[in-house]
Amino acid sequence: MERPRSSRPANQSASSASSQPDGVCQKCRRPVGDAATFCPHCGRRLDPGSAWFYHPIWILVLALTVLGPFALFLVWKSSKLSAIGKAVLAIAILVYTGLCVFFTYQIVAMQLEHLSEFNDVMRRIKSP
Image (cartoon, rainbow, N blue to C red; front, side, top):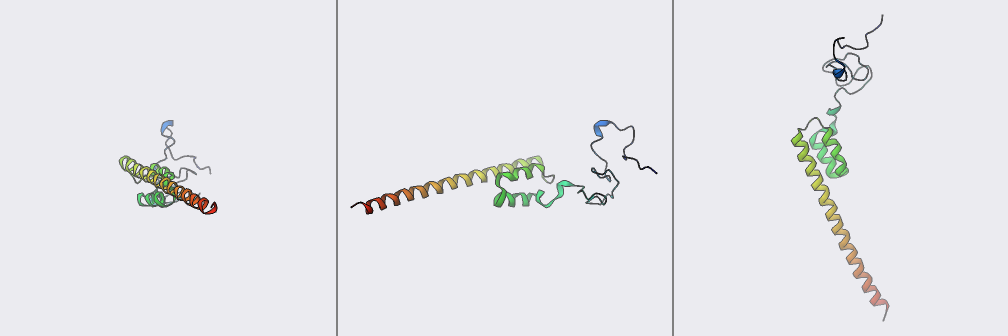
């Protein structure tokens, strides 16, 4: 007995072929339960935007501690945020990154100035 390849009706247009109806895995195209998080046949996550790192609070934590501007990818891939929320969070991450770069520059410049002064003092001590 041969299993049908797709659960789509034959008269469905090709443009909507890429979007699978609820209850069908997009990878193996086998039917799954509506409440399933993973496909029981191939193991693929059925809602890829529901991972813990797509939640806004975790995006912010990752951006402020580890990823910085690289967290912008998570912001725009998150299905938990509206377009305005994504824009606000992206601006906040960019401002935070800019401030970090500015203060790092200030600290390095101050340290170089102190090293230059220390070098001058050491030269005066060496030459009588």
